[in-house]
Image 1 (tube, one colour):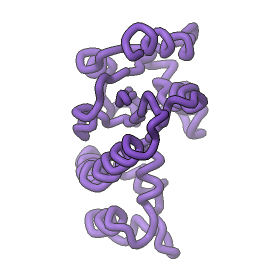
Image 2 (cartoon, one colour; image 1 turned 90 degrees about the vertical axis):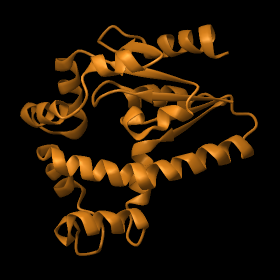
Image 3 (cartoon, helix red, strand yellow; image 1 turned 120 degrees about the vertical axis):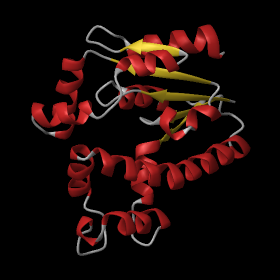
Length: 199
């Protein structure tokens, strides 16, 4: 079984690509964002650490995380983003590594295990990948996709992109790069990579 990392900035099309891959029987996908959400429930070590770091004001009355409020905080304050990332790397990466191990042991028919992680390199998860695929796209197109996906205005989408890595960062570090602009056929691109290298 090969472990493949997929990364890129917001709006580059990672979710669309993993949806394509999820349909294939020989592929299993670990979505880092989903893992974060699963661990962001009351009484987990991860959520308790967030509470200690950011305070009770980031939580709803029922004890759940106020995602919108925390999101606004980290997208407007670089220091807050770095603090959250540090916690995420500590708790979520550990959980992802456990899932990699369990998938390896329990699913012998899986040929490819995909790790979809925006912060793949920053978290160090790339060290556990056989190779990494980065998605890049025109900035204006990424902004358009973010606005549509999250129902936000262009200014907010731009601020989110501004605190993320430029495409050049991913191009330098990844083994394969897919330029996911309007005319890109993602399914054809990923099949080409798997057939030419992975299989």
